[in-house]
Image (cartoon, rainbow, N blue to C red; front, side):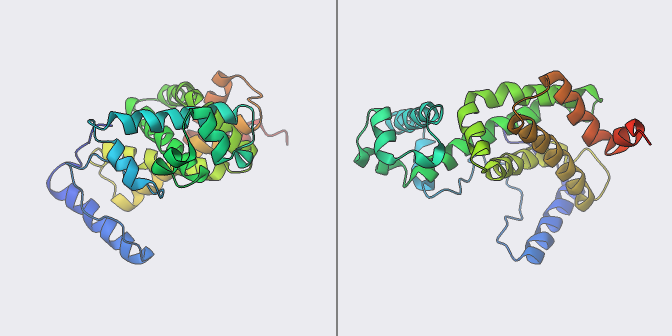
Length: 247
């Protein structure tokens, strides 16, 4: 994902001050300055050192091995519940030994974290491709684009939902998508950063939660209808329910 400038001058400084105050309130070590040259994602998993190494274009063996492990994991999740996959089974499916596996990941959960991060990057790209504030139809387009993006990770996404871990997946996608939207729209509006963040929070949470619920419900309605419901929900809140109420 290409870095997006927060702009210059007053608006940029407002965001830095706001992030500083929020970090102080939450007692976190949140990064409060906006570094336009920063392009590497920060992976929270225990394999962050290896993943950073894999992002170096010259280390093709590491990239290929990790991709092979992730793809093997996806294949196994099509036939085996996530919590029953073992390191031995995954290593055998990937055509490597356990020692090689542990050079790249510390556990099965570590592989899940890595896969979720890759999915989150693609999801953030989807949010950046569409100008959601252009008109109402753009939100439906975003939902449809999500449904084109996520199937590449379908086994991971749907298996974690089935195992009750959808909140973890949704939160991972949410954090990355929110960052992408803040980067894109920080200079586009005159409202204070505190308020813009709340609006974007409502939007991102709404779209991703509706998508997760639709998947968890077995895609009971066509994707086009689900996209329309998601669009109406985030744009009009409970208004459609009031209008369709029998009493």
